[in-house]
Image 1: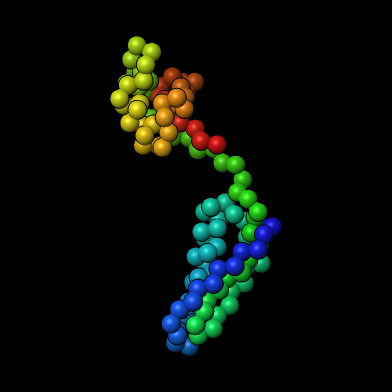
Image 2 (image 1 turned 30 degrees about the vertical axis):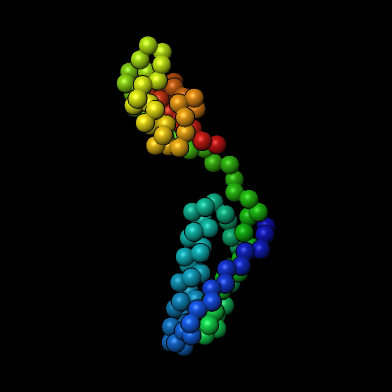
Length: 115
């Protein structure tokens, strides 16, 4: 686990708003860390009239995640053993090249996998 500290400096916050702002920041940071696959423990939030901060222990690194996206059908994506414009557009859309496209076992669609 690694230390994570987020501290936001701001203009003076009215006293009636500090508790709500601190709680919302902690909630949003927790959601973001979960979305990015960084587990947290012992989240603590602090505030002063000019600062709001969140401290937590987070995972040192993200786990390996495999992403799978289905592209156009193989009858459209391949002609004469070569990738078509549809396959090239799909590869560009997912930030890849046609060399990294895979044919799924069902042979119904080209697939892109990221590890």
